[in-house]
Amino acid sequence: MPHPRIELSVFRIEGLDQNGVREIGENVATQRGKRLVGRGDVTAGNIQSIGLRVEPKEPPPRHADVGGWPALSGTPKEDKSRQKLIAQQIVERARLVLA
Image (cartoon, rainbow, N blue to C red; front, side, top):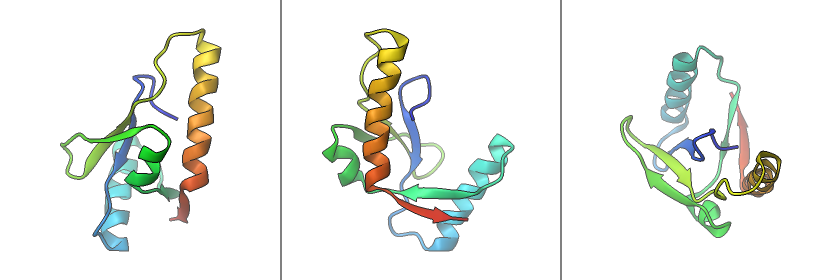
């Protein structure tokens, strides 16, 4: 699900080995005061196929936002429902990798 600002923060990991990807995840978890439990890998092409876009947004290196989510135009409940449907499409295309 996107952050309330209607973007989803992601990292572009193409070309990284598992240690490099894990390092990014550990850094994010530490910054948030949380423990890394896993990640969902999905390609930019899969994101674009459902009408969203991947926009590089550095710093930090390799950071991007997933934009193009439905605008907040209806009731909060309607908007959240539309976002959940799109999030489910992302999950269907993602590969779960446990930490």
